[in-house]
Length: 105
Image (tube, rainbow, N blue to C red; front, top):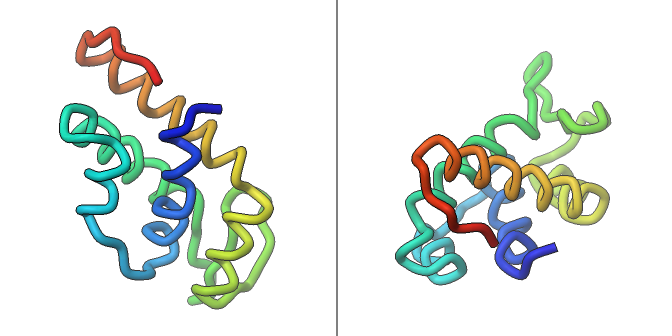
C-alpha cells in the first residue's frame, strides 16, 4: 500500500469517530497539491465507516459494537487498517477519474 494512505488511516479513524483532527496534519501528509482531492476522499470514507445505531457507535465495516469513541478508534486502526487504506485509495482514484487527473499514489 502507498505511504500516503497508510499515514491517513489514523486521521480517517479520528475523523470518523468524532475525535479532534487538525487539518494541517492532513495537508502535511498529502502536500498542498493533493490536499483538496485527498480531503474529499477522506471525508467520504470517514462518513461511511462508522454508524450510530440507537445512539451507540458501531463499526460499519464489520458491524461490531457498541463502542466508545476511543474504543471504536482503536478498533478501526487495529482491525481495519488495510480496509481503510484501500477505501481511501479507491475514493481518491474515483475523484481523480471524475476530474480528469492522471495522478495516482
